[in-house]
Image (tube, rainbow, N blue to C red):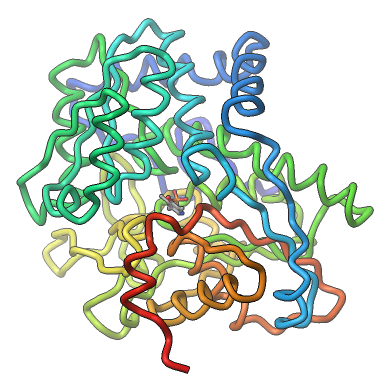
Length: 395
Ligand SMILES: *Cc1c(COP(=O)(O)O)cnc(C)c1O
């Protein structure tokens, strides 16, 4: 049977692998040899599940959105990752990785962050576990996301503004990799999405797979069958989407629809639709689709949503797109904004701008009235209120 999971060599089809500097080889090798053993050990599972329950607040509800369903002529359930501690799905992954880091004897944590959401989730678990924490963040983002910077500092993390390149996420990631090269023995690098060298994409997908594990159980309870007709999520690097679809990858009854950020439109230079616009290349240690110019230089992506503004895409998702297992839609800024206001008015839920891209995809699909749709609301909109206020739809 064809599988969409990673193979022994760390590839999903032609995507993935570990393209790393020699100095990190042993580090990544150690991680590769440790992660499955740890993740599958009883001792890890017990501590992870207990923290997910008592600290994060899991299981997150699967909420039947009746008014939204009526609007789109199907039965829509929202998977409420926005209700997690720290406001998004990212905490599932950071808890898992810090437990692994401790078991590997590491004493210092580094992370990269764009909008600051992964930085806050990392600083949070470092406070919880009393670990040193350094977060790399592009200087442009430090200025744009001041509140998250203050949160990280309050949590005890050191935030290092990065002034190379465009001073955004890709530059912060380069700087984090450079730090890791200088401190390979005591430092653990917590990557925030299903990106980076093998085994990170697989590890992050497994840690987020608690989302689809819960969806199965919750659908069985509420619908009397454990699978939906559609699964929908937004994709930046791909972690909330990976978690949403993980246990359904090989279940052909389930259609997968993923929303990437179209920005001002895929026919303009202002876009972050990596799957539509990217070409095969190497970014941050993995072979995947990359937005690049004719010389292979990485292009700066654009989206109104900082969390989707990444010039690469997880190798798992690149493979799902290339094998057509998933349908990928580019949702533009204005479509996402409309969808965010619509959810707010219909259901009283203000979604994160990233999640609003998944909601924006609802209008692009022709549903049957009997279709059961599960859409993941990856985060809450508190961080985006200013953007929403500046972009109130006219109609
Ligand atoms: C970071 C973030 C995303 C994008 O990251 P993925 O790894 O693609 O899930 C989506 N939604 C929210 C709320 C985020 O904070």
